[in-house]
Image (cartoon, rainbow, N blue to C red; front, top):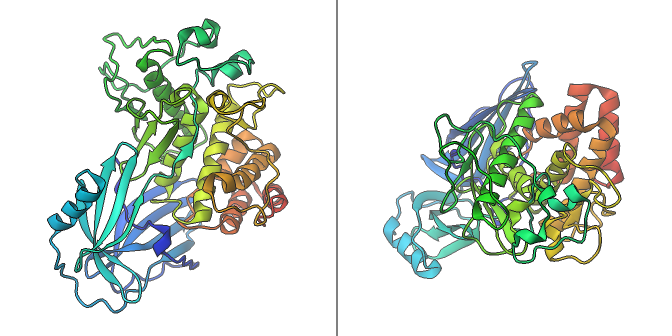
Length: 461
């Protein structure tokens, strides 16, 4: 489980970006609390939580990027705290939690005192309430008890599927397959593939390992570690999620990274009946829905959600602004596609650019069945619609063009490395410039020019 930082909630934030060279900027008088340090190919990245009189400032962050050449760049997202009368809460924490429980129908798991920036700044209780559809973050005025803001911390992704490797539609090159209420007879036996489940914990009889941790209800067990199920059995999706997440992390290690979500990723494949899946950063867990095609039957759904976990590990609370959220969804789609490159043919029936072709059979009629594509016509900023999944198609197409220009390995090293230098509310042009700079440092001017061209075609640069 990761340390939980609280520089989130886009509606209450205004972005602030400061770049410094040579030496680190001085800490704010009101203090900085270390959150995490990550090591990447080009340096070390340390994130801090802004505090005021020892209390976290909601939305306030500070990051120091120490490059291998000794230079330092800084992202300064500290917020002004003005007009705050006192830092002692008049409202007890339990009363704040009780009010939230009465409205949401569930008891908050925690309550933490925070400062909400503004004119004037306010003292508030931040509660986190776990529900089956994600964790709700609520800010309750610590004086009046008024709810200042409430949101589900999960950014939902509509329609996800789950497959074998990567899924039955691709494996069989057959767009006519349908779910048929999870029936075994709907998918021929030749769609299945027997694989090694690597990195299982020594002595474990469950699907728990170095990179994936099964938290599903009625988790499957096997004394001899033989987990062979068919799609009508709940255990099949649990095996799929373990295998897909582990495979993704092993690939990241082969790219040279040792500190990108390098931990057991919690996942749940049972109990959520919507045709939807999500990554919940508040508890660092991925939940897969069972509506339509069970989402954990489609590797590309799993890899998309794992993309959110990757970014949240690299940059705490990534994606709090509209454009950063779109970058997150676009990267998730791209990550699903690039992982499929290793196991899928690029054919007219099932092109690489098509995302989640098995899951999408439950809600699309056109062929090939795609939730989205990474080669669509959208450009920045003309086609921004204010919906992160739709707007993410701009970013995913740019990344896909980088992939086609540099090749899969070089592109993914550049893309993952550049994300260490993002901040939680970064815009597409800012993120694109950091990606170009990363390409230059890793592979030189010709590679950087190709990356810039990819973003230019999409209107981002």
